[in-house]
Structure formats: structure tokens, C-alpha cells
Image (cartoon, one colour):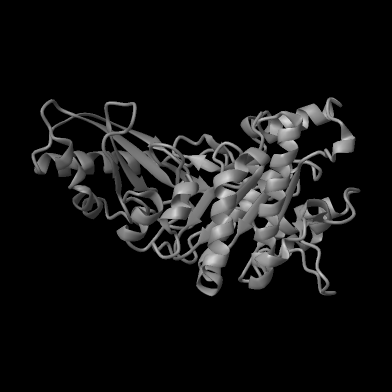
Length: 404
């Protein structure tokens, strides 16, 4: 009940006339260019309708692929994206934005049976797909996520959705966040739950903020995480466990010798909002520990989510791309940016406001990101802060002095 309910939200409003008219227009346009169609059917999502067309024999897919702009013109639509062919089906998909868009509320997603009964280690409920199913991924499986998109297209809301779904699913002893926020204002609402859910490097300053905004502190924290990672690998080796899950299972079932320094390992999720700013100010000092963590840390339960609004190759370098297999692309301004994030075009055709492509593996999935509002986040944080729990943030080890 901390989350907001929206009235007309459960089913997208299906406007049959709009769909029939669009169906007819698509068939007409394709026919006028000499493309025969056997059948066409529509699936209505929260913000997008997918028209699936089965072309007649002997029609070349390339021909349809090149007609995207002509279809957009005849439908007077914002951005039409063509998926040719849809993986696993013998059809071609044409995605057309709805005239009336529905808000996908965080409440409708977290209340879904799928989220309630999930067995994932770090479930992230991102939003709804085009068929109105709740779209969830396991951050522990991905293992790291790269979020990109132009300014104001829903990145920060996406990060809040990630944090919210993890807060709803995990006990403070099982999960710690390291929030890095060069903008200084995006994550400040999470200050209340610092004692419960944060991890930080102890420092001599009095103004100890658990949310890191200062670049020198960012470098210290990342080096400290590298040290923690090495320490955790030593413990795993002693325990004869291959990953954090096996290790924690052994620990809980009292199969480890506590005199050797064994302790329960919480997952650590590092979230960096505006990663481009860090690269510009600290460059290699930031990139190297991030690449190290991304390469090695999945087995010891340290996962990274980095967001940037400038997806250029100088910021998302090959090194970082190779280690961040999960990608969330919100709307970007050009096809080149889309290729930088997803290695394929498509993100420039999105319609903004939380419309995104999620790529983990082969084909990107189009998802309408769940909307979580600042008052909702504040309510959740106040509720967590009022509960008994850890009294101080988790201490990260002091980084080696020669690292700076």
C-alpha cells in the first residue's frame, strides 16, 4: 500500500477502431508497394501495439524492412519500429505507438503473482512487455547492467524501479547498495535507509554521506570493492564453494569454521548514475576498477548497474561493453548511439517516457518501464527506516594506500 494505484491501469484500453484503421492502412501501404500479405493480427501493449504480418510467398523481407518510414507516414505515428523477422515466429512485426498510452505502475508489477513467487536471487521487475506480461530479470544472472538513453527519457526512473524491486524482495542482511551519484540529487532520497541497505568505506570526515558524490571517494570506494572481491574469493576458496550462493548455504547450515574468518556474504549492488561524468573527470582511475569488478565479481555477488546519457564510444569503451552483457536502452537521439549501446539500430525509434529495449542475449525485448514516483520512493524509504534492522552501513575494507 506504499505504492500508488492508477485507476484505468489493469488492461490497456483497446480501441478497436484505431486498430482496424491501422490494420487497413498497413495493408494498403504494403500493397501499393507491391508487397502481398497473407494475414495481419494485432497485440495491444500498454504503450505500443504490435501488428504481426505474414507475407505471401516470395516476398523479400528486405523490401518490408525498408518501408518503415512509409508506414509511419501513412499512420501519422511517432516512431514505427519493424522487427523482421520476429525470432521464433514466421512473421514480421510492426510496432506502432498507441494514441492513448497507459501508465505501467510499480504497484501493478510488484503485486503480480510472477514477482511474488519468484525464485530469482536478485529479481528486478522492470515493467511490462508488449503482451502485457510482467518483465523480470535476475541481476545475479545478467550479471551487470548498462543503462543508457538521452536526457529525460526515463533513465532515473528506471534506476529507481531497479532499486525498488530489490528493496521489496531482499532483507537488509542479504543485500547492500553502493550508490554513486555525481549529480548529487538523484539518489539523495535513499539517505534514510543508509543504515539498513548501504555499504560504504569508513572515512575520517564528519560529513559522512553514504551516497557517494565526490569523485575521489568514488575511486576509493571502487578500489575498496576490488579488495573486498579478492577477500571474498579467498573465503570461497577456503570454504570450497564455487559461488556466493553455495557459500551462504554452507554458512547458514553451519558447515564452515568461523575461526577462519567466515561470515555471511550479502549481495552488493553498485549503481552509478551518470557514469560519463566520472569518466570525464577521473578516466582510467575509474574505468580500471569497474572493468575488474565487472570481469570477476559475479561469483562473489557484487553486481554493477551503470547509467549514462551519452552513449559514445569514448565513455562506453570496448572494455566496458564486453563486461556488461545486460543493456537497457531508453530512447536515444541517433542510430549511432543505438548501435553503441545495443550493437544494432532500434533505440532511436522508441517513443520516450520509459519506453525501452532490454537486451540480454540475442534479441532485444521492448518493455514499458514501470513508473515509480518520488513520493512513492520516499514512502518506501520511511517505512524501511522505521523498521528495526542494521544500525550502521556495512563497512567496506580500507583500500591499499598505494592505490591512492
